[in-house]
Each structure stands twice: as structure tokens, then as C-alpha cells.
Amino acid sequence: DAGNIEINAKNSVSVKGTDSSSGSSSGLFTSTDFNSTGNGGDLTVNTPLFHVSDGAVLDARTANNRNGGNITLNVGQAEILNGGQLVAISSGAGNAGKITVNATNQVIVDGSDRTRNDRVAKFGTAVDSIDASSG
Image (cartoon, rainbow, N blue to C red):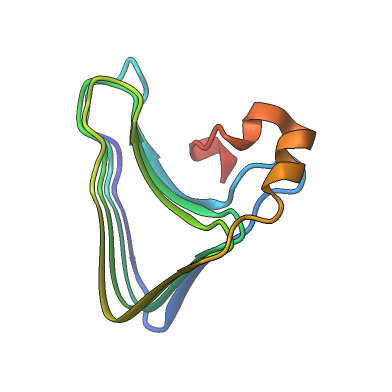
């Protein structure tokens, strides 16, 4: 199985931006490759304030025939802004994982990634190829 990522933060977690030299998204990533045999890893964030923005991602994916990892946010407030994303994808025969947001206060989803078109023009398909090496 892929490794799990669990973050327990007393105040907040912020994942923001992209790499100006490659166009890749910053983020937290778990994945399986096509030839691997295990399940994808889970991403769990426990914090009062979670913020993902400006093209950054939380990404749990699978490319094999096993299940992808889940993304779980246990937060007071979740802010997903300006093209920030929560992504669970399967590009193989396995099922994509679930995305669960447990917020005691509010969830804010707003805006788009203003730099995406420029990054695609400059870096091509590398912008869309989100993987563990891009963060």
C-alpha cells in the first residue's frame, strides 16, 4: 500500500501556490503506479483552519487495479480558494477514493487559478500532470 499522510495542527494548515520553475502544483500527494499492487494512501488533515489556494492541491490517486486513497478534512473551517483543489482520481481499474470534509464552522469554495493558463502556455501538459514529484 502507498503511505498515508496525517497532519494534526493546533492552529492551521495552508497549502498554497505552484512552482515557478516547472509550473507544477504545490501540495500533499499519495499515489500508486500502474505496476504496483497496493491500495492508495489516505490524506487526513485535522486542524481548526485549513486553506488550499492558488493552484495547490491535495491529491490521492491510483493508477492500478486497487482502490485509491481517501482525503479527509476534519476542520473548523475549510477554505478552498483561487484554484486550490481536493483531487481523488483513478486512471486504472481501481476505484477513486472519497473526499470528505467535516467542518464544524464553514466551507468556503471560491475563485479560480488565475495563473493556470499562463503555466499551461509556458510548461504544457506538465501543469496537468500532478504527481508526487510536482510538489
